[in-house]
Image (cartoon, rainbow, N blue to C red; front, side, top):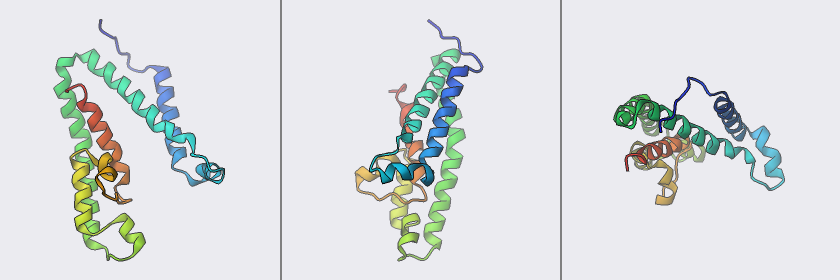
Length: 161
């Protein structure tokens, strides 16, 4: 049975908007501080999970509409969309790790020495950056947000497996 994808599905767009709002709130100290004072985790993290769920559903509708035989072109389009920005971000982080003076805690949290940064960048480019902490690596704050690219890449590989 083929699913007919419409240009915009209003409830899905509303969920996407809610997911974005919750994710933004999760990154604002003003909104997370009351939860921290109460000793509770801020519930806004659910926005990331919701966003991935909505994205997965939209990807399913898109590939179902075009047919699963078009899956390889989907992967190429995603790689062309995500790859350049990922490579640019990692390159800038590597250059900064080379350029900044080390030994200052705050600087090293963002841009550690080049050997540590290169391991972290490699994990991001191989789309396993979300596993870096489990591999014993301390992820620099400058590339911490790139974990979602790894999750997205792994998510896209599931249909191919």
